[in-house]
Amino acid sequence: MNSHLITIERHIIEQERAYPEATGVFSNLLYDIALAAKIISREIQRAGLGDILGESGVINVQGERQMKLDVYANEVLIRMNSYPGRVGIIASEEMERIITANPDGPASMSQGKYVLIFDPLDGSSNIESNVSVGTIFSIYRRKSQLGTPGTLQDCLQPGHALVAAGYILYGSSTMLVYTTGNGVHGFTLEPSVGEFLLSHPNIMVPETPKYASVNASYENYWSPGAQRFHHYLQGREPTQPRVALSSRYVGSLVADFHRNLLQGGIFYYPLNYQDPANPQAKLRLLYEAAPLAFIIEKAGGYASDGTQNILDVEPTALHQRVPLFIGNEELVRQAEAYIRQYG
Image 1 (cartoon, rainbow, N blue to C red):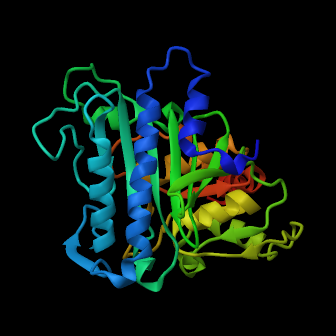
Image 2: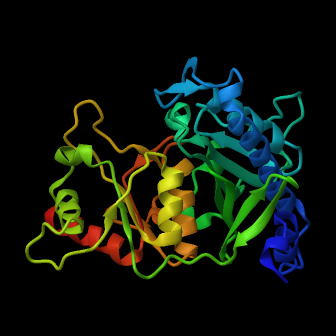
């Protein structure tokens, strides 16, 4: 049958059949995320016509100015996924603490089996320029006992413990890409019927990479190894063969990642060792790096912090940041080699 006639709901149900012990809770959670994506997509499509562009006037836990759409997307995802019995703990990149109770009332989420972690609107600083933005989400099994309030430790799990991860790209079309560990699948929202339809089954990273995505304005602040790797990709390393990659950088992580997932390449954001204004990594381990690392691995790629697999990094804080090199495995391994050799 034509894959374009397969809805995301049908696809989730068909995948569930591979697990006879499944109760449907996990499938309903994935579908709730897809429904939230439709609502957020609708608001983004009409953002220029409503009073939802611009800053909210609030500084979030990351020290960044929240956009109004940040707040809207965050509220939609929380309210759509705090249904009792599904999610026990919610963590958002926009909020300092975890959520363990339904925000619409006193209902506890203590019976929820899963942990939902998300960046509600990645790249939101680009909204007013009409540049693509996205939502990134990840799902873990909770570790704390059912019937008790969820804990921070439920969230502080390494990426290899993920049971699902995905993202929604709000661009010229809205796409939802997700994996439960058995293939990476992409769905495009058909606005005339209001359904996500399977458009990209079994995505694999192309063997031949095309693009390098990096904010090169920070090059002088990187470590020697990261600088040498950057030069290698530019063909400026005399002892290495030239790598024929084009430079493409949007500034919305989801958009850069999505392009490289489909067409091959590498995204990298090294540690800014020598930048006095930003002397640390930029990207968040739980909200951005780990879920995208899980996706890229299931698509045949690899993600690293420059020294180890991102999926092996043990989180120590809810808003922990890490360097990120992600894309075609050969290129990421080359980055690790340069950092090992030159620091």
